[in-house]
Structure formats: structure tokens, C-alpha cells
Amino acid sequence: MALVLAFGAVLLLSVSLSGLAARTVLSTALLFLLAGALLGQGGFGVVHIPEGAATTLADLALYTVLFTDGQRANLAALREGWRLSGRALGLGMPLIMVGVAVPAHFLAGLDWPTALLVGAILAPTDPVFASIIVGRKDIPLRLRRLLNVESGLNDGLALPFVLIFIAVAKHQSPHPGQLVLELVLGLGLGIAITALVTLAWRLPLLSAEPRLQPLGPLAIAVVLYAACDLTHANPYLGAFAAGSALATLDRTAARHFHPFGDLLSELTKFAALLVFGALITPDRISDLSWGAWLVALLAIFVVRPASILLSMLRTRLTATERAAAAWFGPKGFASAVYGLHALHAGISGGQAVFDLVAITIALSVVLHSTTDVPFAKLLRMPPPDNLPPGEGEAGTAERDAEQRRQDQLGGPGRRRTP
Image (cartoon, rainbow, N blue to C red; front, side, top):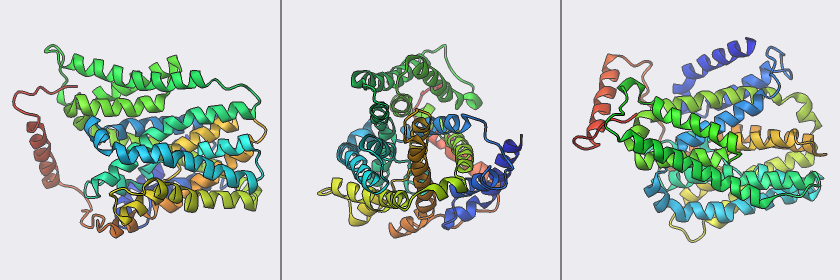
């Protein structure tokens, strides 16, 4: 119960300071990370983290964020932004894997399979820590699409490499065919389940009460998560594919779910950050060698920016947009989940891998979540400075009017769907 109390207290503080955070370098994500470090066993020892809680929460947070983010990338958006996203995934991501593995081998002293494992773990990005860049409509659309699609797909694409390098580090034979099958199965389940449900919603018999409409997409997410677990399909590609399919096939349902989905992903993200922060103890930090610290810094300041800048050569992005795309490659929940998998996989360097990954994620949260506002200003898109202290009846009426207007845009006679 102490953990629940701590989460509620930090959540209350973060919500109360969220208006200030939207205008300054203060970050709500950073508040949860620091609170976890202070309240955990490495700090004041107020809360005890149950075994497996970090893995479970990080996995749920990643799944929820991907399902929600997928709804920002419908089929039309994927087609329009595929050239940039394809460069980031096809060229930038392999460069990041190799670029992290080389210093991990020579500076941190890891053998090549373990070093490549670290590169695969730190390759995925998590732009929820730079939400002012990805989530705001006044930021250039092509930049938002690039970061959103890249982060939505690279989590699932990195998982096979993580599993392959874990198997090699354990001196086992990897099964690439099975891993490819899991990727394809996750992608197929995400699209198929969503398509079947949205088609069923078009039947005259099926309709949802307005206040329950956000629960329809949530039900899809729950069914898909269970289906992926039972079939060993890749849940991360499945989540993003399902979100994208929902936005393509039923925009009304996606629009009704969006506010609820954003809040749900924020809650899971904050809970995972609190628990993950509690794992970053002084012992872990003091045990890291100078080479490991240097690898973490190189991964953030050199490898990611250089890889994306190379992959974005001869594109229509402006110099400022390229800089933003290169910098905003935060390490987040995918890296945390994969790092915990490496820790519990029984490989000889598992502890060193997790400590290196954990400190890189912590540095990334600090650096990227506190530089989103300065970058927004650099893009000449200042953060909101007119946030009211509270929203009264006038604000509620305006929001309701806007919702009615959006519903009418669906066309005459369009039936509300679950």
C-alpha cells in the first residue's frame, strides 16, 4: 500500500505542476523517475518493489503507448511519411545498433554478443518523453509523423535482435524463422482483430452508448494483448498495427478513444517510471565503470544523432527539423523491458547489461524530457502560455461544442460506433 500511496502523491504533485511543466524545462516524467529513486530501497526505503513489477508495468506502458500512438498514424499518414520513416528504420536503426555495440565492446569490456545485445536494447526510441514535439499539431507534420512511426515500429523490430543476441550470449542456437513468424503474427493479429471488430460495429444491431464509446477500442487492445500472449506473437507491432488500423477503418471510434487513451497511457507510463526509478540505486551507479558511463553518453549524444542525420541526408527536412529528429531519440519503456529480459535471461553479463541500459534510460529521460520546450521554441512553436488555473463551466461548454462539431464532420447519417 505504501507504493500506491507514493504513486498517488507523486501523481497529485505532477498534475498540479503540469501547467508549469508545459512552459518550462520541468518534466513530469522526471518527477516520477526521481521520486522512485528517492523512495526506493536505494533511497529512503519507503516503498518495496515486488518482484516482476517493473517488467510488468514497463510492458503494459509500452503496449498502451504503442496502441495509442498507432492511432496517430492511419494508412494515409503511413503512406505519406513512409519515405522518411523507412530511412530511420532501415538505415538509422542498424547504424544505432552497431554504433552502440562498438563502444560497449571496447570501452565497457563486453564481449561481442553481449555488446550487440546492448546495441539492440538501446536502438528503440520512445518519444512520449518528448510529447510536446510528437503530440502537438502546430509542430511540422512530417517531423511528428517521422518520430511517431519510427518509435511505433522500432520497438517490435528490435525484439527479434534482442532475442537472437540473448541466445548467442547463452551459447544457444537462435531461431530466426520463429522470430520472423512472431513479427508477422503480431502484425496480422493487430490488423485482423481490429478489422473484424470495426466491421461488426457497422451492423445496425450494434451501437454503443455515448459514455461507453471509449471502452470499445480499449476492449480491442485487451483482446489483442491476450491473443498475442497465447500465440507468442509480437505484441508491440500488434499494438501499433491495431491502433493504425482503427484510425484507418473507424475514425469516429478512434477520436472518441483518444482523450481516454492518452490519459491511460500517461498513467501506465508514470507508474512504470516510478517503479523503474526505484531500481536505480546508488550501488548500481557506483558499480558502473567510466567506460560504461562513456558508452551511455555516446549513445545519447553521438550515436543516435549521427545515425539519424546520415539516414536523413537528401531529404526535404529543414536543418532544424533534422536536428530535432536526430536529438529526440529517447530511450524508454522498450529498452527497459528488453533490459529486464536480459537481466533475467541467465547470461553471464546480464547484470552489467541492465546497469548500462538503466543508466542510459535515466540520462535520456532527464535530457530529452527537459529539452522538448527549448526545441519547440527553436522550431518557432512556443509552448502554451495561457493555461488557466482551472476549467469552469465555460471551458466545459467549449469542449462539448467542439466535440459536437467533430461528430458532425463524420457526415450525415453516420452512426456512432463503439
